Image (tube, rainbow, N blue to C red; front, side):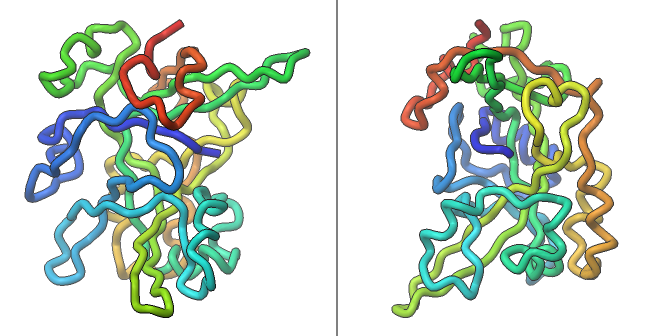
Length: 243
């Protein structure tokens, strides 16, 4: 699964990477958790340009009676996303990219009930962070290089007319790097496939499900971090500090 991630990359770096017309207003976040607002990229319905929106993490289907269902649907499995009622409509019509520059996963410790958190990133970590956090990108395992996780979004209307925009992150089988840590990983979308994933004319599942395989292990890095990250209330550079 994917239950926590980070986004600390500078706004201008994110804008360039996702080819956004304007740099988004972002602040460094080191421990993004379910039910929080997360940045997603989608196509503007009016002009077809890529735009960033903030959606609540935890997808609420349009037919749901209670938005609380979203807390249980933070992830969609790539193997069943095309057939599961909660996600199949969104896969056809409402795909997005969830912006991150790292994510966490917890490895079971043999012979113990303890779990060791790991921080996982994509790339070599050479992209500059925001100037306010220069001291952290000097770490050898530090990365501020953004990447995209395949996502789905929905709009839900309550009986009183209040709307909720929400999203889920798609997960897939682990690659060689992730396999010893966890049996799932987010479906990281290569930049070359952004347009194809967001294409509103690609409505048939077969046209996009093939894009949801595991990301190449050789292009990722992982290292253990402390249990400080276990609490969603902790949101500071200490979360990604290597052990």
